[in-house]
Amino acid sequence: MRRLRNGKIREMVRETSLSVNDLIYPMFIDENIDSPMTMSSMPGVSRLPVEMASDEAKEAADLGIPAVILFGIPSNKDETGSNAWDENGVVQRAVHEIKNELGKDVYVITDVCLCEYTSHGHCGVVDMEKEQILNDPTLPLLGKTAVSHALAGADMVAPSGMMDGMIKSIRNALDQNNCKDIPIMSYAVKYSSAFYGPFREAADSGYSFGDRSSYQMDPANSDEAIREAELDILEGADVIMVKPALSYLDILHRIKTKFNIPTAAYNVSGEFAMIKAAGRMGWLDEKKIMYEVLLSIKRAGADMILTYFAKDLARMLQ
Ligand code: PBG
Image (cartoon, rainbow, N blue to C red; front, side):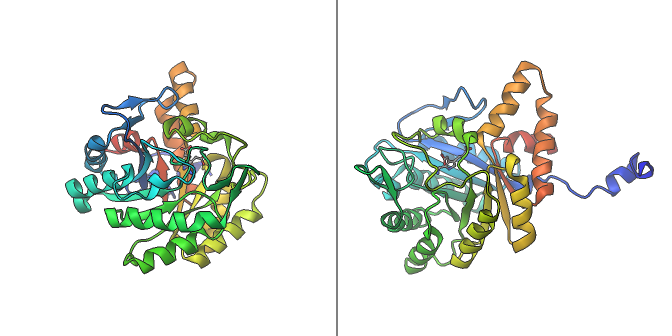
């Protein structure tokens, strides 16, 4: 086995390689600030005011990163999350700015969820008395939100709320509103994970009661992931996402192998924070670990990776 491990032949037999084309760069746009706001648990990642969205997207595009995904932090939260579908909402304005400035130079994906917009922080409409997250009443709101993003200029929408039937309602809403060409990347397989911790600070999306386990998946299950992905594909998803990535590479591999559909993996905030923290302590070589981790996600089956390391990796590959 060692004959092929040295010199040029080592590179020639290499099966997997990372490319800047694999990357999607997440951005947090905050309506309440007028200069960037750093986040303690996500070194190097900032919330940005709407006016800076296109500069940041341009920086990513100049590094060769093909796509960004936008998360919004609104000025106003209410029980149903109505700012999520406001045509002058934070994401809608940011999309508009970016597309105006950069046009086709960057592919703009929007996260479609209510949790950043609801006062209780859950991803759906809530029965406050019973403390229940209601599935069906949430669906039309997600449809409206997706349409508003598309009309603002988004190239793709990415629903992350884990409501049953959300892909079907969003597909119908898009089709009925002249947005037939907008693809859907479904956060189809999203686990109820403690790896989202830093994101909740980043997106100001902590919740006021309970947790997200009534709609996000049990980390113990993998057959359920196949059923989730299958349903979403039947409902019209164009890309299937697995999230988080690292602890779920087996799931990623099963999904890619079974469905042969474009598959994304989300290298989430906690996975990013762990590497940053260990790097800062001098316990790990941050750059090498970043590379190895992202390579392993690709090898497991990801066609695209959402990662806060996108700009770092793009610089390394240059
Ligand atoms: C919200 C959403 C979450 C993430 C992306 N969209 C958090 C959650 O479900 O609580 C997490 C991303 C990350 O941790 O980097 N629907």
